[in-house]
Length: 431
Image 1 (cartoon, one colour):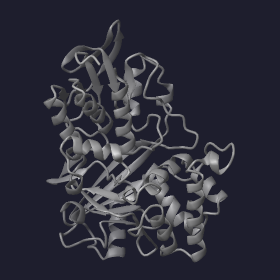
Image 2: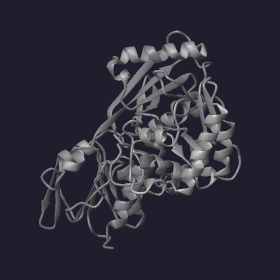
Image 3: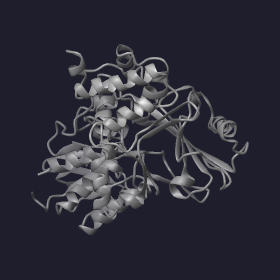
Image 4: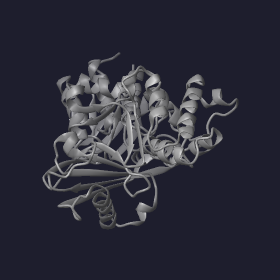
């Protein structure tokens, strides 16, 4: 590999910084351009009311090997940086599934059989369905000949996972993992997630909640690592134009125009489509459907806390609640996450925050009103992981130009692991 070649990475989110670290580890002095004031992209730290928040709540799983590996590579400590606990799905007073300390996949089968809030018949249906998926190696074409994909709803109906079983188990799992309603979501992508998290080792299903904001967790450390290897990371310096020239690419930023031999575009789909429209066919990128994520932060007195660090609500406005006091020492701070499209989008931010506050008061006897609240609405948070969706490949039709991001082709939905894996793949393909 030519270590003197000039490589630009557009975007300082998890995909871009994963590519930058991978190249820096090989001795390449890369240049990262980020338009925002901080790194992290859609998984970034946000400051409000002298409190450090995140642009949205992200849960890592033990099977996120690439993300966890890179965090450690740039100086992180997984056991110190995260609160780790075994797989557990809790819908307050409605459903509880906890994985015991047993080898996989036995831990999951026992968890299904012992689940609270389901009838015995439904528990056996869930356990039997999981065994069937394991035998089929979590591939739809092994479950049924000729079936490459279908919606999650169709899959669950076909294999008897109906009623409470879907409402309390599969639908919350699908929306949390794919950020897409089950009537649209890709069954094969959900099975990919289940395969990696539930069918390997018991630790793969562990849930990891970061004790720090997502900019500090990886991108900020990654920038220090890249700069220590001779690279550069420019903030508030978005690429305005990209033009292919005879021996590479001409990038124009607020700092001027610079030539690069190779480029990894690690921006959001909308930015990539705009930036690359004169260089390659961006129709596939521009056509990707999008889904929102709303995060409602509510600050209460320090003594207010949830029964567990992470808790779901059944058939409520809030889907998942995170107690930041138990997770990150931010006592009294509750984060409510509402994934995918829904009726909540018709509410104003004030109405949405009040609806969440009313649920906290009703179910946990919290004060009627929080000290303050902050709603962060990412209306294009992720691509909609629909059945049969075709996603753009990391390798483009233009030589020496790659795409990185959670929306690019891969087994995973729009997750941090998917973003990191795409960035690593782009970096490894550069010779």
